[in-house]
Image 1 (cartoon, rainbow, N blue to C red):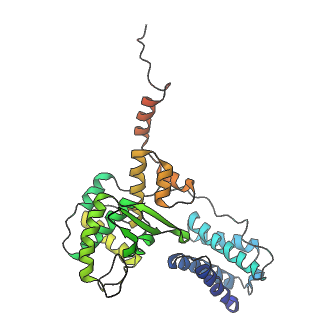
Image 2: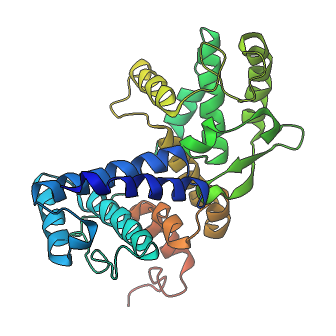
Length: 304
């Protein structure tokens, strides 16, 4: 059984937290993915990490695929295992990486879910009936205005917001900091929120967005509140915080076509990640093409 060597997971987690400085959410994902590998190894009678071979890693991927896990989730688990095995190689526990060349089955790429402009406006123009609703609207305005991730939103402190300059300093993935613009409407709503926050905030709390007790709001609480907003608005879809980030990116690209600018706003390290937002509706694309391409338009010559 692998129980004796599970302590290596603790050492790896410390490495990710202290040296790579990953977020608590990412650390939790790594731990959960690797613990599923540990369970598989125990089922297979694998007692040491050095006994894990490529064929067994393939069996692990096949097993979780049969259990209904999608290709992207399987790939994430394999990626976590590859990173962990690299750590074990550095520790002298492994001589090679058994997960190195194992790939997950491909699944159709899903476009990010986004809301159309009418739905966004209907949502953000809703009247708030208490201070928590006013907080929620401020969060939604900021998510849509600046394209933030959920972890970036709840991680914001008061000092990160500069409303006179209409900008925010955000700590993104990999502990990378970027400055994003904050739109006029979002700035107005945030200004009102700061007054409300001062009344309900716990002493010494630095978080921009707080919960009922006056302390920092958790990602889970934001998700639960947004779920309520979806029901209140009569949406037939879930209102996930990332939907507002996706909507921001989609609407900016449709208006500007500036992929590089949207990449910088979203904090994407790779432009390929940003390109998923270029899903313009085909009819609109065809109209633009017919109008702009010199050899695409219909002939204006009369038929003889």
